[in-house]
Length: 394
Ligand SMILES: Cc1cc2nc3c(=O)[nH]c(=O)nc-3n(C[C@H](O)[C@H](O)[C@H](O)COP(=O)(O)OP(=O)(O)OC[C@H]3O[C@@H](n4cnc5c(N)ncnc54)[C@H](O)[C@@H]3O)c2cc1C
Image 1 (tube, rainbow, N blue to C red):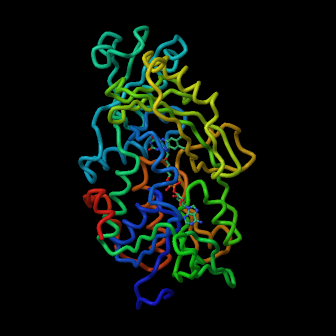
Image 2: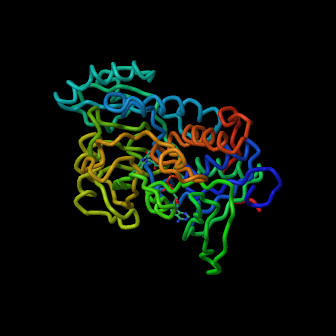
Image 3: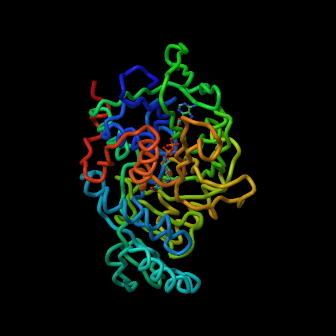
């Protein structure tokens, strides 16, 4: 075994976003020796920058039912294992045009097929719940969306992994993977605080670098078809709604308003880039958040600006696929590069949602465990997570 700890397999996870954190938690519970390296702060990539919407899956119920099922299952499960991390505020899908109304029957059927509970509300009922909704709304459908803190919720995976012995290292950049005779046996890393370079040996390396997966996979000479697909989010001052407000149509720009503490976050747009470090916040996208957001909640237009930012989705698709990224599935993929590319000791986990991190980690940890002969089954479904503050405990 590489890494020198007797017969306990050593797994190096590259990437300290929610995916890497959830995987470290899962593997630590299975008794593996885990080292995770993150080149910035934990959750400083896409994870800590998303809306904070715990998806019910309704957004995907018509066009991406695989993701819808993953979302509703994890949504229910996370409420049990991460108590206190969610505002259990539900969401409304709001129809404002005739076109939205034609979407309604398929939406309700899709939710039923994927196991997402719905309640159809007449305009007056919806306005009683959310007085700042567009008064011209035609219908609203209540679903079990919720608000979460995009950083603190996944930090609970890190906290619990750490308590179970995982070694979590921030500000450590993987600059190369060690590959010889078709086997990955560790990584060359640079400590970004001291500048020192060292190697970390491992029995298996997992690439959990989200939109950077393609770059890290290239270090092992393999191709991971990721399309980094950024989106812009806008926060305005004032809590304009208490529920998560969505537009009743197939996903589009500015069609989500998420209440976050005393702010309202409007998202998002979608385009594709070559380099996940070069996103930008195009001003026309910010304007679109205001224009489309105010179709749902008119007060968005006058609300004071707080901030705007962007983050990139790690969507799975080839460079020849769709231009906006909206057409690509939100589901996830675990790639065993021994099977796909003939490179042993290297696995990639990518795609998915902030909502489905635990489920992604379970599938990936099953693959890793099979490869390394770890027989302990997944225990994350029933393990209540430590508070996020424990992630910073000495
Ligand atoms: C605009 C937008 C809105 C979204 N809204 C929601 C939402 O409301 N709800 C929801 O459930 N999901 C949402 N998502 C999806 C969710 O944010 C992502 O699916 C999830 O955060 C991906 O996590 P990750 O760990 O795979 O990637 P990341 O969080 O990006 O983590 C990858 C990490 O790898 C690190 N890394 C990269 N290269 C190296 C290297 N060489 N060495 C060491 N570390 C490295 C990076 O620094 C980064 O921290 C949204 C996504 C976007 C883009």
